[in-house]
Structure formats: C-alpha cells, structure tokens
Image (cartoon, rainbow, N blue to C red):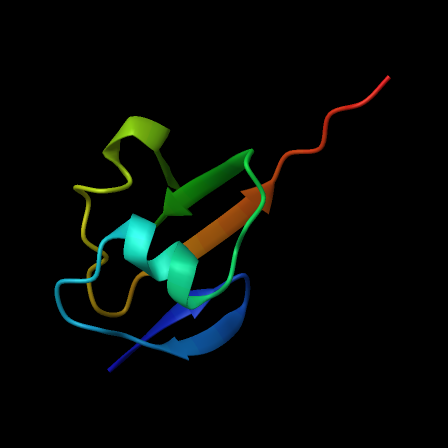
Length: 66
C-alpha cells in the first residue's frame, strides 16, 4: 500500500491525517498547500482529513517576500 507524494512513492499509513503526514515527512514550512487527488484541502482540515490509500498528493510550499 502506497501513496504518491510530489511524484515519489511513499508508504501509506492507515488513518493518517494530513497533519500527521506532514510531520512524518518533515514538512515544516508554515505556508503549505496540500492537494489530494487534485483537490485542495483547507488548512483548518489538516487535523481531520485522512489520506486514502493510493492517493496522489501534492505538497506545495508557499514563499512570501517582497
């Protein structure tokens, strides 16, 4: 069982939320967008939304500056 994260295969963990997934993958940027199967997940839902097996996930770091 696996998922695809930014075009790389990663082990899938049953009942893992986006919040736990980001910690496991060591994503630490404060501004991040997560898409599961091309659908954007609102940041306030990261602790509730679980990642389905065989999902295609995109994690996009937002960079601000002037």
